[in-house]
Length: 325
Length: 89
Image (cartoon, rainbow over all chains, first blue to last red; front, side, top):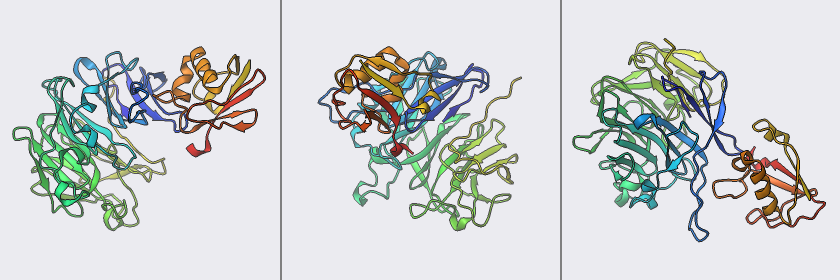
């Protein structure tokens, strides 16, 4: 995970060293040099505790109120830093919320927080997404939380449990920056859209070639415009018919365009992970990277793509950084 | 005084040298080492002060026996080597 500078003074990169655990580094010179800072950590559990968690890796980093840093982790934990990563506070209230004990792992052994949306109109308002734990909302900067997953559907559970709020598997959640009441989710079971005014997630189906995927991008100005990268669900994680496409809606999910120009249409095994697709502030420049180490860019909202890198290591995260003025 | 040294792979991340510490068992030694150089703790131990899953320890040429409690005994001549475990790749 990486968090660009964008005027804050520091760029952050979260590492998972494998042998030596998760680490967090920051750079004050756009990546020229780096320094290690503190890594979020769960408090030591009492000896008789049923579970004693340890951060496996940082899954998401975002900025919040007064330029604080938010970090979401696997296992699911929310952490806040008010000193640019020198120290971290565990937001215990989230894990203590009724229903949190039902969360379980999706893709990893443990549940995790991969999406944090801070309302730009009131940064006390946070919405986070947990795989698998649903969508949770706080109105008071993380003091208290409520599950906001109504309308989501989990086909991987016994039928009578499909609507359970605390075991939904949103793969990625984003709010429209210009209209934060509009939320989009790429869920394990498909695409969902929510307007904060009614707080109910509408499932959007019948998207060719698939509603399954991980990645999501939302237009910075137009809440009805969003992009997805479809894949085969469950059986094999690769593009449908080995043809990589991006799907785009410009009418809130009523219709979708299948965008394939410039993308491989045969023998593509590229999977784009949840943080592997990003739209720039202009709403027309997009970039995406795949687990096969390929990177494509589009300068016309996805109408055409051009490969800009290949043979990289698996790409987990792509973010745009503001250029120096 | 037990002598403890570290895999060169750790030096890629933090500059650390061999050291000698008084310790009657591995738990005491690891705690003393992490107290002497606080940077080591998050590299060797997890949030619950357990030995990281993919870190292992050799005592006088034999792999540790008690990963949970680190109760393996040491004596004044013990040589301890802290390494990355191949389970981590």
